[in-house]
Length: 158
Length: 432
Image (cartoon, rainbow over all chains, first blue to last red; front, side, top):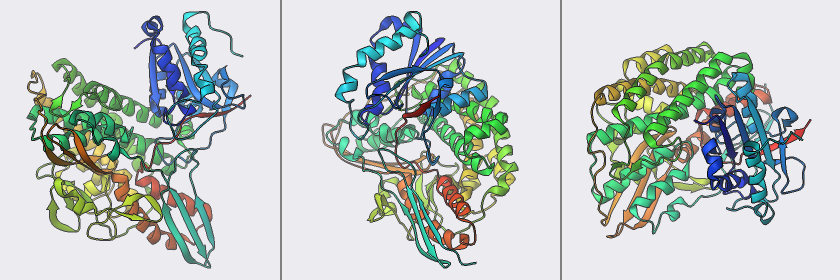
């Protein structure tokens, strides 16, 4: 296990919901990054995300998110800078909310020392594989921003 | 006191349907009590047609992210049956161990994350962690260990890589199996503390009994998970996996896009409680002790106790895994993969997934290309029974407040541990 990780969340069969895994695939071709950082596709599993935090120095999450921004916007934030407004019925293990996972890791005292979240505002959510053209055209930019978290001096949280 | 109730519990979901509960009662008379399943069909049976015999497992594993090992096992067993392949005893034991890792993952998550908050009066596991931190740490620790167990045997936590027709693509080294044996021995005290914590609040498990037909695998001399015939609590008759269609008798109903099933009655139940009811005589000592501790005793027809049966199965899994690992200890495992030659044929299988008995059937042409497939999953088999439970339960709840009725019904749905469909997982945040 490496000290740092990028963890992607999302379902690639639901349009822009798959933004996280799509960015992760872009990052996988970067061999330098792969040598230093674990690249983890958490898919739909909040528990995988929770376990990925354990014992790490730094974890960067990338997830599709309703943030009130223009579709396609990539926004970097720290967990303390946002609160979840997601409502879940708690009927199924398939449900997940990253913000809740982060809260849980903190409660358990089992989180990474540093956590950064990159949210990508969706344009289209719904059944069907593949991102909207707007998000697809910006994948390289998203990957660059996330790579910079590890390969260059991290930008301060905005 | 006669009550008027209007409940429409439709879980928030953005792209795929979850289950929906609708209850209408006026002046103490129930007008409507329905379990609706509006999820979209997923067409896996069509996806595997025209695929080769060795392409089936990677596709059908994706039916479920929680039960991917069960689907993989069902697929490779059915393919082996169709192509006339017999695997070695070592490979069979490793498959059982692999399957146990999934059962433990799933049961611990269900009991620890979804049921425990109900029993302990918490809205979800996060507030539960604020009041019962040690308990939640144990749940997370058990789940993490089960994940790593899957990683070792299946190649990764979800969607196994090592399970193929004919056996395993990779088997752990003896030292890895010894490490697993030591790790599992250390999990027993953690699991016991989880069971004791649930026992302390077991009084919150609703008491509701309905005479029910239970269906599960049965194999002489073992608590069956991966082999045996299909048995019913209604009769001594059992049927081989190859006749599963005559057990499930799938049919469609207007209130569900999922097929429902029935055997000797209008519905039947599958899952941990069904397995317990049909196989409790085969429980190993620790599991048997836990069953006694929870008062499960003989036949149990309280569906809320399914979660308790899952806990009992956690003990069974840990105990039986130790037995298997002891028998494999220090041995250089050989013949864990036999050669498979494509041939025309048809085969079916039955495997106990965490949520109940799972059936797969495939037919191949002489080149080993799939011509047809039929999958019958546990949650589908439970839908009809859940409906019958709701019809029976609701009239006795009308004296309660609407919130309490809602809680009891949601707890009933959760007790079945439904795996209705995969939903989305995106963020929805407000910046502060």
